[in-house]
Amino acid sequence: MSRLSMSIGLKWERELKRIFPELVSIGEDPVVPDFYHPPTDSWIEAKTGNIRWGVRLKEYQIQGFKKFRRPVVYALGLHNFSDAMNRLFQRREADRQRFLDEHMEILKVCFVTQEMMEKLWEKERRVNQKGTIDYCTIKDGCLNNLFFGREFKRFGQTVYPESYYGFSYGDYLFLTGNQETPKFRGIFDTGKDRRLIDYLNRRGIMNAQDRS
Image (tube, rainbow, N blue to C red; front, side, top):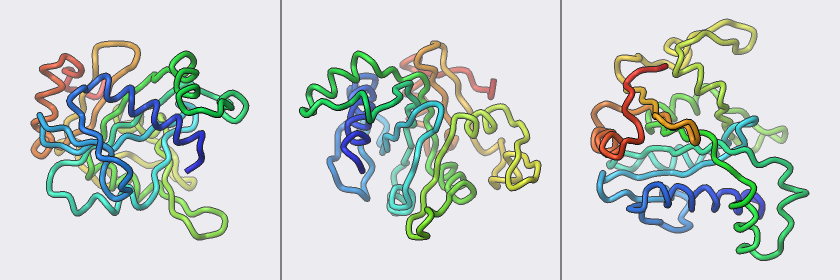
């Protein structure tokens, strides 16, 4: 991970911690999610990306979490900070964080339950040009397809979310938030994620149980 990516990721983790002050940071272990949330007994993996390009996942961030018996939810933060190579040139991390506080805004936050993220990984993953690294980019449009249940194109074919990714809408709860910025959304397992769902409802962060 580049220094710039690390700084932008740290900014998102700080923002997530501000929204959910109970989060406990786990540290730098790559096979453990970024945070543990004691009130809901859940693990949270924080990922961020530009809203135009999406969030990029790596294989260890999917495969490494399958061993966890407690729920794992991915917190995807889509931001508006562009041209990082030319703008985020400060030498000290504290200075870079101050600059990001002034110029980077999280526009959308989408929580995705582990099983759904594994399905997205399976269908959206690609291999780099050298054929050595699997990665997966989750774009805002991909999430919109899921929430609106709309058809889309893959490899020249028109497909639908349920059949393409292999799930049933009846098995998941799609939540949307009230506020405009950031706009909160979530795709949850109705059983495993129940404590987190109740927490978000109590906090007034998400309470609209539909895909609109």
